[in-house]
Length: 366
Image (cartoon, rainbow, N blue to C red; front, side, top):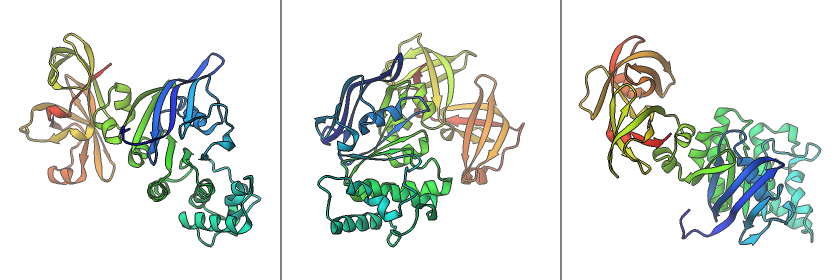
């Protein structure tokens, strides 16, 4: 996060344990006011624990949780200036849409007047594009509409931080795409800090200002979606954020801007190191499938290798090929639709060439 952006929430050396189980370990993170931040990682990585610590559903074993500059370790969840949208929405089936949204307002002390509640609920309904749905029952609403009700219930209290616990997990792919756009629009419109927990890399990359990648209860890397995708600092991040091909290698020549590595087969590759690298070090070579070109004629590129096509999967906007090089083994190549139309479809068993620019190769720690 830029130093010029004011922090709205912080985790300072936060650890959470359950007996001998460490759910979160030494978390340090500053979340900016008006930022859209996502916690990303597989099940059990600690992302939901981090969200619950911010929400007040869990208390840290060590460290401090701050909201708007105030330490809130001992502050109950309902007293924190945050609201949460749960994965299964947690709507009240016996209440209609209006009363679901108004519920939090009616729990306030002092309680707002009836007209104030009505105006706030109607404004929240308009914000999520559900004008006129106040009298509907929850079971009469579609999955996407129920999510909007949950969002309206969360924003009606005007929280400083809105926490979202995989709120789109139950939606189909098309509706999930639509709701991602709506959430982004809503966040920009309201200016509220959004903190999302997800295991869906595409969701995190497409929606967030920054992504916090977690593994084993620790923060592995924090950065913009582009930074995490283009310059991951580890094999774990490169493999989790997007798809990548990995090859083990040994460094034979190294400088701050250029590196040469030798594969176990003797094949030499050149790239740019993302971390300090020493000669003789065992490393991991990474290259994204979409950065590899596939051609029938030998291309005028920095790195060219002969391959045999082993498999082909048509995915609409691109085709995924499994190619094999005698030195490197099997790896994936993604060919855009237009490029394949120009070159023609490659068949299983066909001989071809792959190529990439030196700048496309990442040298990472194993």
